[in-house]
Image 1 (cartoon, one colour):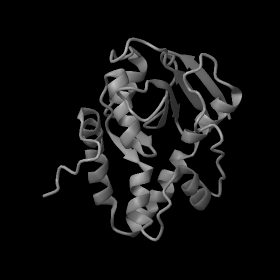
Image 2: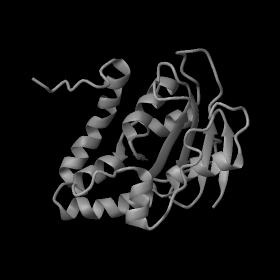
Image 3: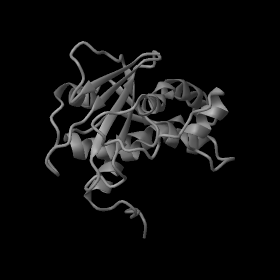
Length: 207
């Protein structure tokens, strides 16, 4: 496994293929208040590329043209776990709409109705037999220099998403819920935009 750290944007010579796993680290859970600090990406080859986002003016999207082009590329599937948050913070912080997408948490909710445990750590342990460490989950991602432990933790959040997708795709097919999942994935970027626009906890389809 190789972890490559980049400042501000992806290098020009990096390619992730047709499916890229993506995660983010931020200073908190409010995109309007808490800045984006790190974007992690993997092509499913066991390697991870981490893009450290510098602090800029509040509310002004950071310019990362190569990363933005990847996120917006209609030919590349963006693979997330709980993509609702990541998609929202990426659009707010980088000014780019992230499509098309796949969310392993949504897929797991559709096929693993016998449990209420849908965290990445739970899925990796139960579907892949991999035990992820979450010790760095609440560390300071805004630090100018990230520790080796932080980098390893950040990378672990994207290194296994391709394998999880493969397992969940089989279950979606088995349970006859692939079409439902694809419809949910297609709506997910809109749900993220509703979050940023001020409807984070409102069911707009409710009576």
